[in-house]
Length: 120
Image (cartoon, rainbow, N blue to C red):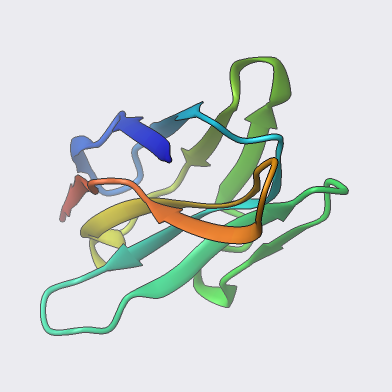
């Protein structure tokens, strides 16, 4: 079992910045991928950014150039630095990890979600 603890959401004015953190703990050997998704009211959950085990990253087109995903392997933590925030970035942001354990691979876990609200 893997536990994810998210932090860093909040209310910010348009043009501002926030940094989200997601710390993972539990029984796992390593990460296949770590990422952030978001879900706005009335919309489907969508990928925001993801970093895979080799270090490659991919971003939603809507956040390219504004958001940066990074990780601290020693702390089992993934970050999302969000700059130049826009009202349309308002959503609940969810951390997602895909892990390897001693007995299984490709296990997927979600954080509880953290609210990001961008005012105009």
